[in-house]
Length: 203
Image (tube, rainbow, N blue to C red; front, side):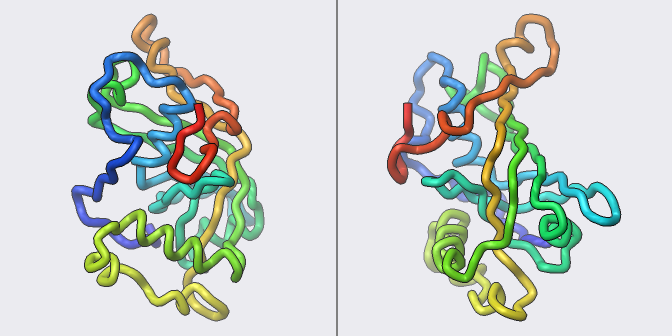
């Protein structure tokens, strides 16, 4: 990975995404938002002049519009592949889930997607930089220890922030697995996953 290691356990944010203790299953768009809010690593499948490549990056979700944001070295294989071929696919998953966060009582959840990537523009960089570090490191003191100078993401700097916009999204079909043990996915429309306002779930 070209991204920094994160402290384990990862910081957990509270708010509307916290386990409410309810017993009814979450709707698919809500499950999707929970994954995007709580997961921190995505495996990206890219393709470039030398063929396919997979890389795991530390992401955060940015809402309105919904995009994934991460940073990587410019010379990393997946970064160069994104420049050559912006269309990518990937997978996100969580384990150890309980209560309403465990779909059909299964302690794992995950999703697969297809989308388009590009480098963040100079105008987007300050917002993405601040959001990325504030989300990964809510404590200002810890954030100051981990945050790289923003200048390293500009001009001839060795790193870049990247954004991924979803084209299609598939969710793990936990209910199907409880019936016949077939490991399948079902599609969730991307607009259904969007937030109506920052921090407010739609639906």
